[in-house]
Image (cartoon, rainbow, N blue to C red; front, side):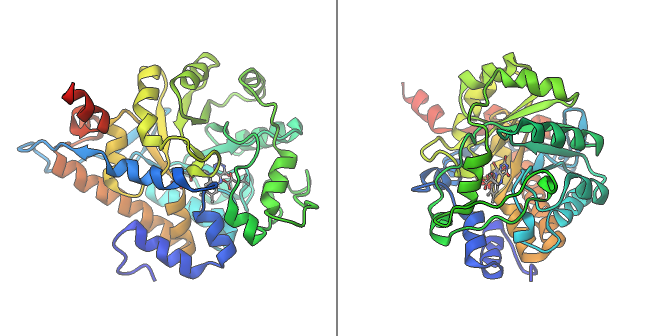
Length: 364
Ligand SMILES: Cc1cc2nc3c(=O)[nH]c(=O)nc-3n(C[C@H](O)[C@H](O)[C@H](O)COP(=O)(O)O)c2cc1C
Ligand SMILES: CC(C)CC(=O)C(=O)O
């Protein structure tokens, strides 16, 4: 099925064909007007590449290091919920693909497979994404299980005190299957019979009082490094460093939370400047091409994460589809680096891209 596929957009078409409408729209959709959803992709397209020629590019090195772990390319797997809605093997297939590609998978708190099942099926480096519920004992339980199962970092998602308004899910009356990590801890049944059950469930469970002070609590329950996901401003990047985050993920949750937030690529540089290399800055949102990865690296990200492309690969062709998606991005990045005159990831610099701001400044 994935033979003859030449780019990520084609995987999206396959996924649409493979999935029931309710699930496809859950995966593909964004919040409200989906303004940010479009912007996440379009703002990458506004950045221009400035290649250097006559550089020896006979060998291209893609590998990089994240929190001390070497990965084959600066492209990681973002946490996305409920992979069994895309494929019967769910996160186990995704995890095996991550291991085969030698990259880091971030397992979603809201996965359809448990932290233990995924750990048993994948010897690659894994991070665990955490939502903090009103019932804090659930976070303690999950973090401890992740630590015991060999996950290497906690990715705290900070942009979801409530669920964003996803109109397709409301229309489709999206259902929520029992979340595997919560089995025996709490039920995911909700009473709401109108609109998105996911929204009702999330709003009942998420702790909207979670705040910067709570990072101290989180640190008290784990020895793992904590990355904060959902940072979009200089101010919050500074706060994240003050509370001791080991890394920052510039993210607007794939445009599924607050609509009209900026495209992630357009705020990356501001965050990178605020952080000043003290901790790694990662980015997700709208990465669909190797050139996008290159642009994010040129603007200071240490790596990117991809969300929907992985789900589209999974829906289209299970583990093989995810592998193909990751390989496609790697191959495109490798070619971009060769054509831009960058033999290694370290050679990708700010001077290899021109942004709208650069164009404005050159006019002053
Ligand atoms: C279907 C779907 C489910 C998601 N589930 C989660 C989740 O459980 N936890 C989380 O922190 N982010 C979640 N995200 C956000 C992703 O981690 C990531 O920020 C986003 O997908 C990146 O944008 P992209 O899809 O354009 O690559 C989800 C995104 C999608 C599309
Ligand atoms: C279960 C969730 C809250 C999943 C999520 O983060 C999302 O759908 O964007």
